[in-house]
Length: 235
Image 1 (cartoon, rainbow, N blue to C red):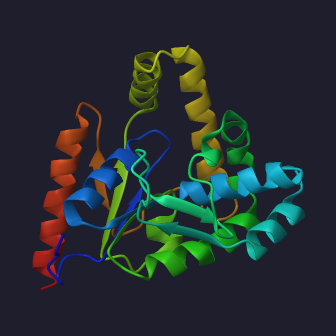
Image 2: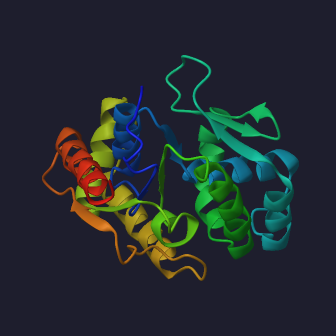
Image 3: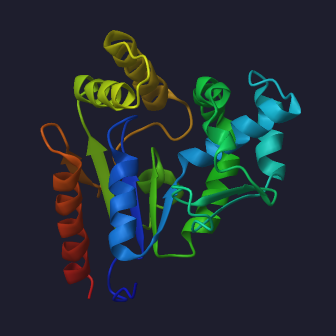
């Protein structure tokens, strides 16, 4: 899809876990013809690599070295299997491998290691600087791509996020406990907002979107208005 040159080339979307960042980012990328890049997949990739190579996820120094020497790349999807992008680790396609339950249970601890975050930030910046990208994460507007022309911080109450997650799991036929999901989200929020490196917070010039009471389509339309407003302000 052709995109006018004056539209923001780099769009950053941050926010807490399960706030709808990925849904919004994918919708915006599809509308604009941009690469959708959920930076959380990089932390999943390193977690998967550590588990595959027997690196203890409690060993911050070893994890940091692993992140520094590994080449992770994100490319437009090359296979029509519902993937949002190709995720490559040292040239190997790990797009679906990083979604395994074992990775799910360890990725928060890995992503909190300062050295891992610093190493992966450099890789994220390399990809983001290609332009025409919607980048989603928890420190994109503040740390990874502070030069992004449009920064969005998407929020929703913990209760709303837990409800959405519960309904998503229920619709997939999976067992789910609302109270456990809510407690897990609150723990994740605490980890993300209190970590030493790149704690979760909105950039000073971020546009705040509160999605409580809004469905995904409404959030997307609101965000797209922000895209065109940004274009008008920077012709």
